[in-house]
Length: 100
Image 1 (cartoon, one colour):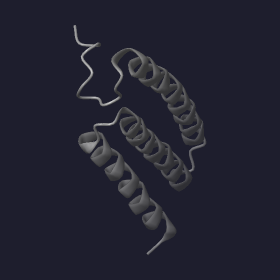
Image 2 (cartoon, one colour):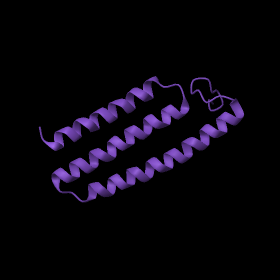
Image 3 (spheres, one colour):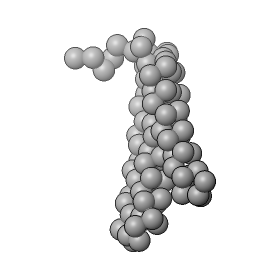
Image 4 (tube, rainbow, N blue to C red):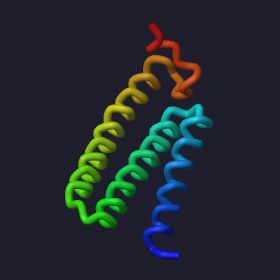
C-alpha cells in the first residue's frame, strides 16, 4: 500500500472522528475540537492532492484553512466564555440565549 493511500485513510479517519464528535458531543469545547478535526482533515486533504497532482495552490489553500481554524478557535472560545459567564453552563443543548 502506498504512502498516499495510508495518508488518505488517516484523513478519512480524522474527518470521521470530527463528524462523530459533532454529532455526539454536548460540551461546547468538545464541539470546537470536533470542528478543528474536520478543518485539519480538509487541510491535509488539500496537501495530499496538491502533492499528488503537483499543484502549488493546494498548499496555499491549506494555509488558508489553518488560518481559518485559528480564527474559529478564537471566536468560538470567546463565545463559550461569554456563555459560561451569563448562562453558567457550556453545554450546547442547555443554552437558550442565542435562540431568536
